[in-house]
Image 1 (tube, one colour):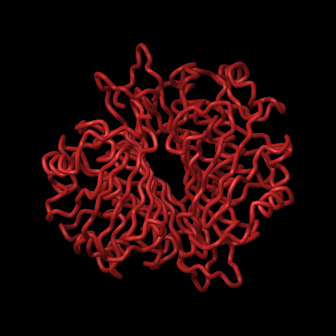
Image 2 (cartoon, rainbow over the protein chains, first blue to last red; image 1 turned 45 degrees about the horizontal axis):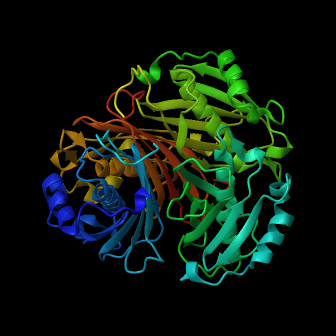
Length: 153
Length: 153
Length: 153
Length: 153
């Protein structure tokens, strides 16, 4: 099954890719790092600074959205290779509890990897994945590829 | 943590509750059954008949929506008790691959169980949970309760 | 702009199409009818019977889901022609207030009509569109067409 | 009907509120401004700078998410008054076409304004609202109020 295949990018590949293709992620210092990559799965971490915080010491919605979107996108690219033209078509995020002003991890797994569409689930947590602070589901459009092995839409 | 607490309804309780409170689910025979209940989790099965099928021998979108909604709702009630006034406020469903004309299982787990809102994730599959045919996230409004132990919204 | 183009199906075309391609919609009598079709827009009505109702005299969630999905799907086909292989990839529905046991109208308008994806917005109301009982946004995958005029994904 | 009532905040009130309660929106200069306020509706504009742009001269997803979230939130507060503890519980955004590196307007209207939940629809466009670049639907939790006139959940 496609979503279980071995990824084609390593952790080091992901870090290098984000630096070269996505430099604006790091304009305020290195805040987003990849922690883990596996079959159909990537985990990324946001190390928050003041720019991501809100009154009361909680992480802002846009910071959580950014983490979920980058991590889901990298999960697809880790699986199919460097295709920057994979674009988000929908992202639905549920804010479950107020996060603390601490590092935030985002665990992603592919739900579908088709020829034209991919759907990824993301759980954002701060140490206890059974008590997530947010959950997101994101859909991506994949441009036509010469030799796509995947089937279906 | 609330979502890990022991459920207050057993499998037999769930079956009895659906029969008495939700008889219209069974107007065409017993199609929806509970397979499993655990801390923050319920699995239900739809045994399809012609009414749920579409040309090409696939299960209709409304049948999958119904399964996801009933199963997520029962997941909350199994945790907090018989409160029929828990109502769906949002359900977002991703149709991933065309299901076969075979029984369809829906595995639900609670993402958040607050005083006023609950969020539940559902994976619909036909034997291989790593290759789901659909995924849904549903939000429910919980009416005020005398002695709700949960905190937050 | 694509979403403003004149539809290629008339009201009569839509009714005939639903009868021939979607007979299971009418197994319990004619419940779904098209009321209006215009550039990038279709309105359909559900005339409820006991099968669609819930205790308290309200319309069930699955009945509202079905109306939204059929109406959004017809909105795309009315614009691009009879392509039954247009399939729903996501439908997110917000249940806003409990509907009455009365006819329910669903007003759809196309937000995007691309070569491969279409997004449609639906408002379900019972006489007053400013007080909708539900709102849905649905995404559809469009199969490759020989001479698609639309651009983008 | 609640969603049609006259707003309690003027354009000047909104601008002042954002400056005092939400100063982090303006850390890089005044980028988000309110253009219009009416019954159940607010329009806000994002004047983009380099921080919001992506390679190819398009506006980033997080910038569009931020605009939609702030504008929907202000739409509720304009209607019910200064209650900073109104928090986003879900935001689902559809990215429809790539925006240009130009000002982006977000037109919001309330779909539901209950005692405990509000749902707002947002269309993001660049001059032609019939050709939106993105659409979002957002849900907010409203804290208990002493004298809430709204009914339902």
